[in-house]
Image (cartoon, rainbow, N blue to C red; front, side, top):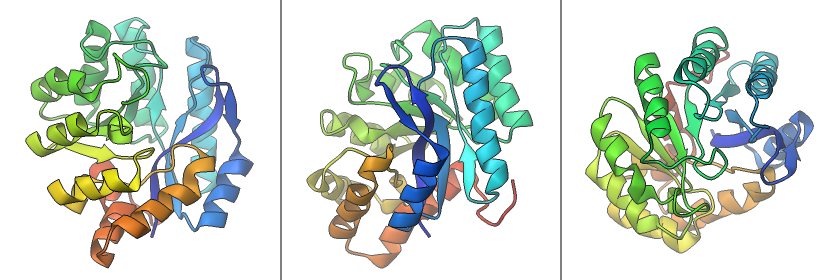
Length: 252
């Protein structure tokens, strides 16, 4: 089984691209990807747009039970009450399994008050946080995550892109230091994956494509870098299942 822990749906207002349901489904079919955790592309900075993006993902999940799960993603610059209520709605009413923080797309410093709101919300709702790192320096430097993962030991943190080849050492050090931190290394090259596996067990890594155009390359790099079939299975599906509590059996 292959599960994509980090894929997108919708139009991105920052990077100006769109992922449709048809494109996502075709990409998964062509590359043998069984399902994934879907989050919005970065919508316009209006709460109504975030809600619509989340509702769109829910419709995809309902159409493909046990294959797709939702992840909330919205600006933490809304009032803490509005932010919490929308993430609560996503988790409690739409069945989403996590929340995403994108320092560059949301224009938020990982050491800011608003970033802590994300973690306080996740702790209250009992969900993992995925945090974009790499592109978007200085805010997206994974080293800036240290106070959050230190202060919120009960919140599972997935470091998206694992530093994106720019800051893989910082990302790896966090994953080594904290049991509740995992790496999602989309965008990291084969040498980076080999470096992670030299220092970390495979259950600290999870597969993702991020965007459809990267699917074939992301699959290839793991198949070349990972020598054990059991380790490949762990990275391709089991880590995401364990971290996000997925049930790939048709249950939502």
